[in-house]
Length: 68
Image 1 (cartoon, one colour):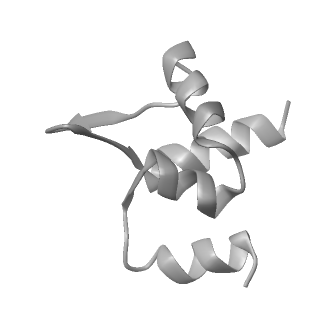
Image 2 (cartoon, one colour):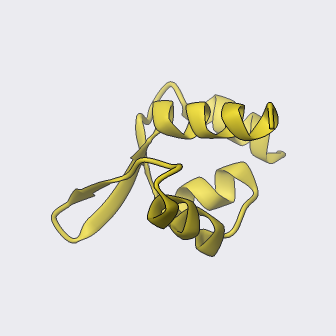
């Protein structure tokens, strides 16, 4: 199963992802996502000790990256 199929299968069950999970689903490294969070181009939230990214924020980020 490729990343897009995996993401579309899982999206009905999940609305937020850890950085590592988001990287696996979208086929990018954890470091790539961390850099974008630090730059402010990808919004993330801290929940306790975890950092999560809402699926809607991931979709918006990758859509904006695609149109560049």
